[in-house]
Image (cartoon, rainbow, N blue to C red):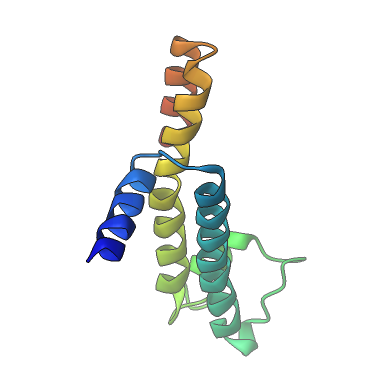
Length: 117
C-alpha cells in the first residue's frame, strides 16, 4: 500500500508541476515518446496513394480529413496534438514556479501566453 501512495503522491505532485530533476526528465521523456509515437502512427497510416512527404507537405496534413490527405486516420494526429497540449500544462506550471523567483509578473505573463498557444 505504501508504494501505491508514493506513486499517487508523485503523480499528483507532477500534475501540479512540482517536479524533482529526475521526475522532470522522466516526464519529458515519456511525453515525447507518446507524442512522437502517435505522430509516427499517423504518418504510417497516411494513404500510400497520397504520397505524404515532409519535404512537400506540411506537418498538419497528417491531421487532415480531406480525401487528398489522411481521411481515415486524421484523428490519431488530433489525439497527439490534444495530448501534447494537456501534457505541457504541468511543465508550464513548473516553469512558472521557477521564473516567479526572478519576476512574478513576467512568470505570469509568460505562463499565460504559453497556455494560450
